Image (cartoon, rainbow, N blue to C red; front, side, top):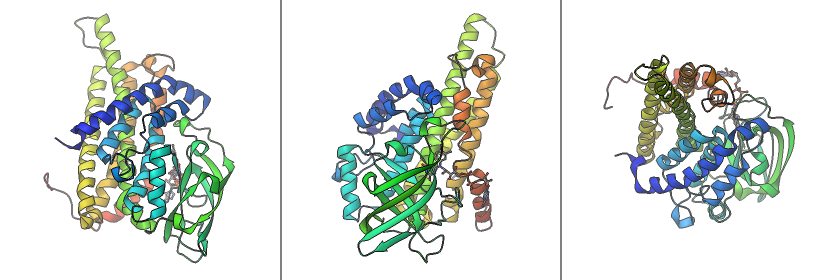
Length: 393
Ligand SMILES: Cc1cc2nc3c(=O)[nH]c(=O)nc-3n(C[C@H](O)[C@H](O)[C@H](O)COP(=O)(O)OP(=O)(O)OC[C@H]3O[C@@H](n4cnc5c(N)ncnc54)[C@H](O)[C@@H]3O)c2cc1C
């Protein structure tokens, strides 16, 4: 049995299912009104799910990556935007948990997150840089024990409900674009001036608007490790696994809708296999493949955390990047197959088989760090690694 089958995972999953039931009630409203799914976020706080990753010694539950991925998948079946907000918050939490335990300020913050269920936002994307996570134009200016940090942050999700934002920048004014740090800035330490509206195809509830971000605070709020290490050791893997899990959830709900369409067709015409059934078979095959990929990736990540050389290896880098590319592209194929199963009732926006929102939300997956960028990175790594021709590794 892998980590997904543990007892804790089941208890956590029950709490997540209660949140998902609430999120599902508001999904269409959130989409139509282009607003944050505040009911789902409130429910996450009530169930104390925002602090599950924090170690027990600081008041959290020490939830595993597998348990949190499962939570993302469950939320993904109900509301893509709520699931993405939860996943992004947890990706930020992983930077704190993996890289902030040695810093008193960050430990105190984690304890506060447990007590107050604070929401953590992210500002990595920058005007002039786009999704090139490992480059910054802006820099953090440290004078004495204080910092000043301004950033043209072209995309910050759910900023209006965030209690803190974690911001990447160059380490100082003369630092190279790749010499980056990550700073945690609390709500009362920054101002946001809106530069871009969020009127988009899908994931509308994430409200990922652009802002001119200006802040000041204490220098101890800068995470001690370079961002290069944070990205390589935890953030990339956490992002690709948790995004992948919620994207899988969106596709799984599309398959569930297609399957219920097939069942209703079969009831109407007993003895006849519904004409769209082969499309569902193909969709379910792809869905199963992504699930297997995710479970393997979770096991590999747990292994990599215990083996620093493996974590830093080219082979691991290739695997975790391929997970993102494959998942984000395959969910579109799955939902398209489901649309072929359901026909017009799937295309319509007002039936139990509607798939429009799933398809629109799923389209964001390839852009969220452009697959072109990821593929170029992987292509660069291929020259340095041997072909994988063994099933057991
Ligand atoms: C729902 C959603 C929520 C988000 N939330 C946040 C958030 O909270 N915080 C945050 O910081 N960001 C957030 N982002 C932004 C995200 O992380 C990426 O930064 C963003 O999607 C990249 O945008 P882009 O396509 O404009 O930029 P780019 O990555 O620059 O890509 C633009 C295009 O240029 C091409 N391209 C440019 N350079 C290269 C290259 N070197 N190699 C290959 N191709 C290249 C690509 O083909 C791509 O199509 C969010 C995005 C989405 C969709």
